[in-house]
Every structure is written in structure tokens, then in C-alpha cells.
Amino acid sequence: MKESPIIFSSESVNAIFAGEKTQTRRVVKPQPTLVPDGNLCGRPKGSYYWPSHKCRSMVDPSDMGSLGPYGGKYDLLWVKETWKPFERPTDHTDGIVFKADGAFVPIDNTREAAERWVVAKDNRSTRCSSPWRSPLFMPRWACRLLLEVRSIRVERLHAITEADARAEGIDPKKPVKAKLDKSAIDLHVFGPDAVQRIFRMHWDSINGEKHPWVENPFVWVITFTRVCMRCKGRGFVSSASCTHNRPAGAAYAEGSP
Image (cartoon, rainbow, N blue to C red; front, side, top):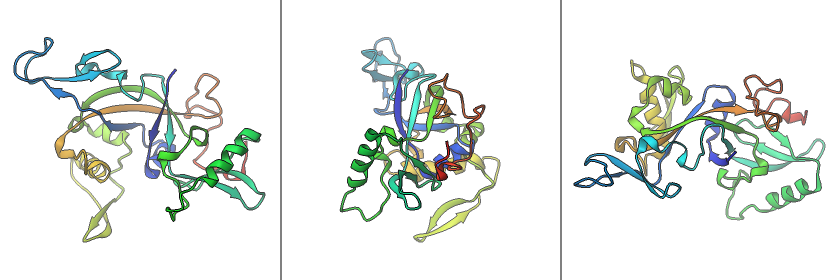
């Protein structure tokens, strides 16, 4: 079983904990290439192919499936999010605080855990004024959120349906954060395609510089379910049915088991 890291924003982490987000889209890198004039390995002009190092051949996008960096069905994704090492002042317990919901998770009561926590706490760049650490630098041991891949496919970004957009965590009843003359405003979107339009705004706010919506890039479409960190060694029980399931941060803040 393969484990791969995946970065989520604080907003997405909260949506996952709330059960509102069960799908994510990630840009395929490199993008599939358009077949040039004439046939290429039996592929007609106008079709696309993707160079697969795993298969050592060119693969049609519809066959890419589990060939990408996120594994395949039943593989695991460990979530990297904004975090910081923190010593709880009430009892001097060492742990990790997560920006998404302010949850505090104590580290294991072992010498190894204590040593790596000290290294992480002392390893902050002096050039960074914020106490928060980038998800890029989250180590595996600090992860609190584990996802199981239920399906993975490749498609064009514009192929997203309303059901897909809702699975991405889009709620048309909630206002969208937008910028107007350098000021942040709450924008309400209405209409029959409101969900897709809101997703487009979210997409461009994150990927607009390199992979904007208008370019309609190929994307990995990953459907997942949350896995209980305590059950992960016992059949990967999903959080939906797990007796340990709780709201994000609940009880963790007090160090409860």
C-alpha cells in the first residue's frame, strides 16, 4: 500500500473534517501532449498522449488512472497543512497546533518523538516573522489527517459537474471571498451554474497564475474518504463509521485519547 503526501489549505482541511469535501483536483504534470500530424504509435491526429515512466511508454489520458503521484484505489494520502510546534503552557506538553482549527495534538510520549519535536521547533527560519510553518515543510510524523483514495481518474478541468463541484466542498449558499480594488469582499453567486462558477473562482485563486481555468488543463480527479488515525492499523476504518470520530480539534486540545 502506497502513501503519498498531499497539500491542502486550511479551508479545505476544515471542509474535509466537516465531511463537505471528498474530492480534489490536481494539475497533471507534465500535461498530456497533442499528437502531431500523422499517427503516433497508433494514435490519430488530434488525440493526446502522456509520457509514463512507470509504463515506459506513452499512455492515453483515459488510461492514466493510478500512474500518477497520488497512487490508486485504497492507497493513502497524508495531508500536509499549515502547522507549528507548540508547548502547551498549562502543563508544558509538547505538541503540534494546526492553523485550520487551532487544534492541539500532543506528540507521542517517547524520546524519539521529543527529539524530533525539538528539532522542528528550533528549525524556524529567522527570515520568517510568522510562527506558522508552511505545509511544504510538514514532516510525516506531524500529520493528523489521513485520506484513503477511493477513485482516481484524469479529465479536463472543464468536465467538472455540479455534483463534482459540491464534492469539492463548494456550497453556493456561502459567500465567496473576492477582491475588489485591493479590498476583500463577500460575493454571493446565483444562477443554475453557480456551483461550477464558484469552483472556477476558487480554482483561479489558487492556480490562476500557472494553470488558469481558461486553459482547461488535464487534472487528476481524486475521490477520497477520511481515515481514523487511530484505526489505520486495523483495517483502515473510515472516519464515518469509526467510534473514535470527533469534530476537528475536539478533545485533542486537552490531550484526550
